[in-house]
Length: 485
Image 1 (cartoon, rainbow, N blue to C red):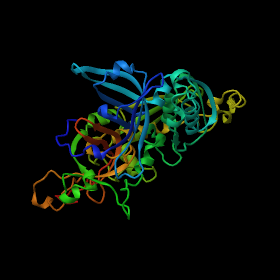
Image 2: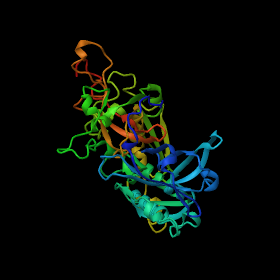
Image 3: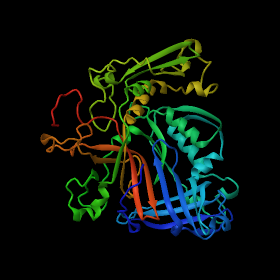
Image 4: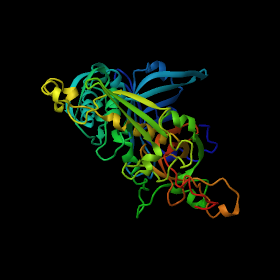
């Protein structure tokens, strides 16, 4: 995103209580005043947080410390007025880039970092059998056994004398999935296994198989996207009665005196569209329709499921998608309304029998839990794979990024309200000045799918960039309207 021209949010808008480098020999150095640029990223489609730190070095730190790409970076900050909500994180430095001299006695370089849990993941493999467990139980056991309770040697040893990693590691929160399954892992990393569980898990509350695994400010999450979409919009801290946070494009009539206070954090300082409708791309990603083919090598049978977006939304017997708004992204008269999935097919080797194989007459006493636990605890996640493809495609149909005043209260997965002005100079539109498709003050919800805290120490700027997704329309695109909602 291009740079912001106004340095409206100065250093007193971020309370940076800790910014320390920790070397492999246990040395600590406070670098709060050497921070030229700090970016911290969260994303619901990324397994762990990452960060980049630009250091303005006038004391030869990189050579004397030295910085060799094996350090830890301890960080703790908050937005003043945010209550006791701190972003606290330990990152592992994995590379140094863009090193350059500013003059004879000053140089700049970037430290690229990942979550300490991500570094542990890259150094760990799992060789285990998990039998008769839900996928959320497998995911939690893998995380706790191989990430949270890791006993790696060397600098990552939890018993190391100079850094208590157990204090910095985050826990995992899981939503319950359905059914008992078995999983064998050989040489896979913990995060890869958990991601596989997320891909296979089916929710007990929602018909969509839309689990995701990601890290936010507070911890790791194994959760269904549908549950995020049903959450209430974020509330403002310290306001009684609680009111929803509303981000507004421009001043939207907010008095200048109020802009100088806490309301200035609700103004959108920069805005850009990322993804807008692309019907060919959406067709290929299965948003309008798709086919799922499952082959059963034991029964020598095939099962094909055809999914159509509008059929799912129209048919009262089929659970419709959980979305931010209730209106469809496809019109009834669209060429895509009767999509049969010709452009998006997926193939799976699966048990297509609804029950266990031992209930098939000629399979009795041949396939049972004691001789084939994997087929006994069968996996029929293929049934919802078409809906999953549609759900992820819907979230990529309309996305945008906004820049707001730095706010440590925000995390990915939050729902926020965004008021976007209607691009119109017509008199009749001045009474309803908000975007018709994205909603007005009655409904303008967006899902935060990505978040970047960016602090530029040399300019005194602290902004939070939000990547927002809208998976449905506020207005019915099949209804004719002229300038009114």
